[in-house]
Length: 441
Ligand code: 2M8
Image (cartoon, rainbow, N blue to C red; front, top):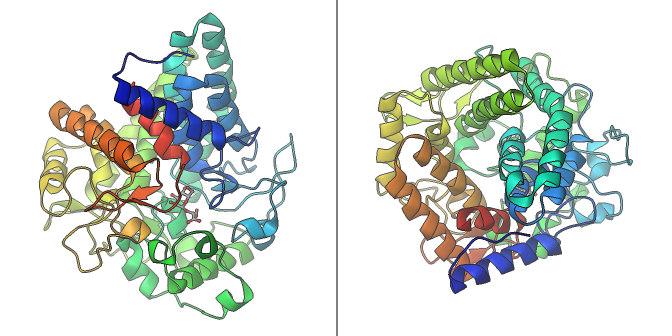
């Protein structure tokens, strides 16, 4: 294991982060948190691999492989892969609700039918990039793993580009707030207003999250009634994406999700280059530019000079300013005027560094409730990459230090109070720990 030259304080943080990842290793994959999320989550696996690249690259590859072994024949990578050794009651909604066959060949692990932001190509590229620090055997392993993953990563992109283009515009639509990774973000409020909240669903199904963590820090029962209603509608349609906008009440183009989709194409271009696939590399770069152009045109609100989520059914932009609207900063081909506008928004009283998950000045801002205000390390890590892409190195460094300070003072929590820094949600949270390793390196 190699550790960078760091101060004592950083050494302490490095060790505690590595310990969290060990604690959450199941023997096959890393869980986000033992109590709250006892299965494997899709974009968590990507963030976790970024951190494992420093302390245990073999495990990073195992995590990604584990997830992709549960990939559906249509290319979708499920948002949760269930651990068959975990009881149905340990997470809600568990495998019994989703009723999905186990696609994986290695072990019978069933999954959900939803997806999450496709961050895995970037993660695979990062793990590969760091392999040389661990020696020749590790480089050889990384090449084998990249070759195994590449066609699967391409299939994941094709699923999103072809089956999820609900608006016919060239962007991928999400069919559930869970697919954004930013579950109860105010970005979905106006769309969800039109989705019935059938509270009787919560009599049939008992929430598990509020039994193991503070309900004031989680989505509300009304949110959950809508979440479950959407799951049942998508499930009962056979998880089909045909005529989504007509058949399903939630089809939204999220600026964060689509910026990650384009970033994945850029990472795939790098991977294709390593694998000697020059024509494919060029195709991935072209795709990244195409997606960027549509994000720039379709999700931009010229009046407020911000990016917003768009309802693919009505064509309306969300009125809420959220952290997802800052993520197009990750795109190198974003027009300079739009990148500058994002930086202006970050520096404004509405956000600041580290960025909270939603506009601090909005009436919906809630310092405790999950994706409606608290600070999350993962989206700030993505923002920092965006700052580096657009040459804002001073602010990227300021953000890096602020994130490390937050975790050092308060622990490896799932999210943090945007005013006091208090740790919220689950302690010993995997992506917080994993990304700390990257921020320290
Ligand atoms: C949260 O979402 C899950 C549902 O997928 C939940 O609340 O039960 C989100 O923060 C999501 O982004 C994350 O991937 C997941 C596991 O950490 O938890």
